[in-house]
Length: 497
Image (cartoon, rainbow, N blue to C red; front, side, top):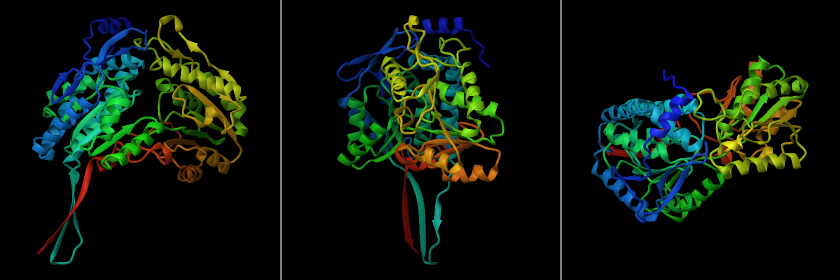
């Protein structure tokens, strides 16, 4: 148990050595053209590092390295049990460097240090360890054939994987990809968001220390329209996996068609409904969960419970409980272990969130709490957790992903209406249902078009549960054994006896 004060964390931040170079073929390296971009902390606006701004030439270098290493078999042909041992060592090194990685995450994108340490780093190590532990327990198949035929169904590593990950959970989303991609024997090129590249750059060195051969994991910081596009269009990348916005996800599908038809697996946006029926088992617990579902990680969560659907008969009793619960979620310095709402990732995101709050006012929603920038005197990027009621599902704040702590309260009169409102969205990532009626819980959960449905809780599950969306929230699944499908090809081999 790490028990550090804000002063301790601030002292460690001053002493922290930050690496900003790309990582190609097992070595840190500048971008080919020498370009960099400033990495600015949203905590207080200070410059953290100059980071390599990679482009086409760097993508080519990384792909050549990844392909050569894959073809050599030094990792791809290693026995699964041997890869497992390395992956577990990788997880252990992430845990051993937990303080450093958590500090990088907090300084880079603004989340509270307690979350970086206890959620992001812990779950990242878990993803690496779980995938490694699983890989020598996944069996291939023998087809039911006639007596003179032997039919084998085998999984093979797909080759070179490009992984483009978002800025809201930089290390954890990377490890959700790295775990199964590396465990199955692929070579990986990781492109972190330019808004939060630091943990990805650091963890690359830990992978080599763990025993992953040079060239198997490469990290290319830079912009989506430069190095991200280069990877998406590259003719020698076999698979591209992505977590981010639906807009970018659609463009990546276009790039795949324009290039080599590389496999594209996408986890995109969400506008998740959190449905509270009058017979919820505990309205106080539901209210506290609803507040956490929108305020955690500053609302910068693809599964954020941003639409709170409340049965009309309890609205006047329940909504005040939510307002009271969200008062405990206050923006503060992310290096303070007591802070539960940190900084938004940057000024651009702050302006986006504030513009949606203005849209809520303009469309006639009623502001109950929040709605303003906070702690501006710090030089950081903070906003108050915000709740609107009287929201119609047709309003912008109810239809578009805000990626900030802005909650829309919508009322309904029946289960059928709740389902209709919940599904009236282009997204389908997650949903929650609160009810004491087990039949209602099952029937509503089955009717919801979402990849994850939680009953009498919000954001449940662990590495054993698949994660991904319906509709424009994407395709494929992270986590669980189903994640291995994204990083392998199925081969049928028929032998005449």
